[in-house]
Image (cartoon, rainbow, N blue to C red):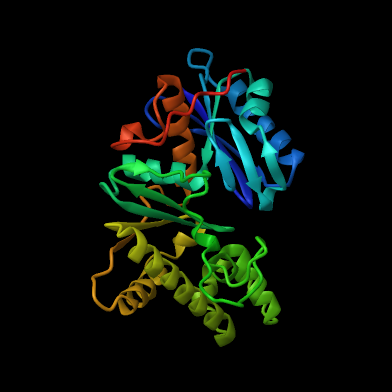
Length: 313
């Protein structure tokens, strides 16, 4: 039984038709716009994939994951500053346009559940998505934690440098302002280094100022992970999102900085996500399947969040 999966990222919308074996041969993407345009683009991507599905195996449900503060029970995005959304009934809007039940959850929390299902950790894990912004999925006791207001895991808005650069959220010194794709590009531009065309080459760029901005960001990330380690005591920290593509180039200094900051305990294991930058998309597919089974998001992976009923078309 196939499902549709959609990951609404800060830069790109990624959609896939996923069959019962987890294969996703049919995919589509589009640049992320803002406001109502995002809803229209998302519906168009999903409808296009739905219409291309084999007649013998039409999709039965949709899983949608997005950044922001998400109320999965209500199918509502309470606030997503980068998308221009506030109290948006996204699940109901897409269900009406697609004629399919739609499940909605936070992108990084769903990605954490997908990583847990893939066997990347047991029990206690912190999944950190490094992309246009920064978010974290908190797994404790094998369960994805949503928090009191659905906002658990806002690692990107942990202040790691008081009085530091202004963040899009309005605070100063957030991790996201120092080490995210958007934050790094802004800092490079402010330093007169806007010519760096591709962040993938940033750690090896010949310009020492550009490399120093990257290294400063790694140290900010290490401080955020230090604080998260002291608070949550995860057995494993898994890095996903587009910036995790730096691989060992990122992990080597990050491991050293994290270990150096932990004076009396060993650091948790640092690893790259099994699903790489597509953990959110895999989490969306898992969410859609669990909607059909009427089970919580992470039940397949040793536990789950509170039950999230599907929005009906």
